[in-house]
Image (tube, rainbow, N blue to C red; front, side, top):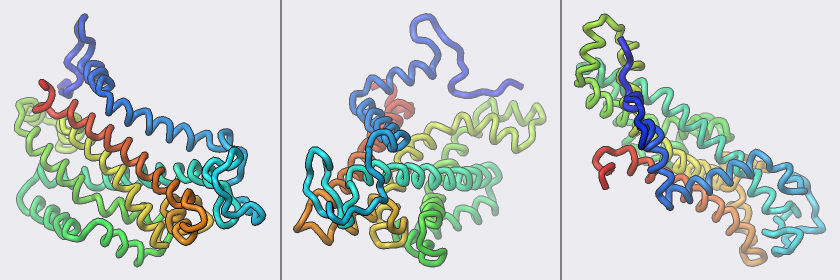
Length: 295
């Protein structure tokens, strides 16, 4: 039986495939385009960091400590003479890695749990969703703090903690999507054709339930960066001398009276990155939500 997805309905001479039409509409939104520009610039800077800046993010130069912005050091230097802009650029690598891995952990565990819960229902649904409710009952940052405190303060455990924090959100989104999709005729046709439960879930249902997951993943990515920065700020995430934005915020606040750029630059990096991801998430929601497509 042929698989049915929302994007395989063919093409036409005027508008192209549905997937291409969605992409064009997404890029027509100026705010969404701005989000893509911000995120692509951030990714480019993170990948090519060694070629963008001549400084080493870990090299200590005590004679140049706490300098104000200048043509040599655009954002000044920190308490150990390290170039702040360089550490901001290298810090993007940490934030992108933490956000991506955390969301992948949440997706790879939360989505299957949500799909199984909706597909089988009954006791399985009750058991899985009550477990997710128990996790969701804790504020995100407090749950992440508790997990990292148990596992130990480092960036790897921070990624695990953030992934666990987002399990309930992704499992609920997946469950709701599956409950909506599984009543369609093509799912019944797959059952009648003798397809296994696993094939029905991943070849017939999941492709048609992916839109809300994409939106939630983009917004969750932004929140994961905020939580990682908060954990690092509290000393439970990235550890010195890592150029983590949250760690730079913590270190820079001690020298606010001497060089305000130290802390402010790290805060701006977090703000701009989260803004870009949220703009993309809002654009995806507007394009993929059937209730908003006609606007």
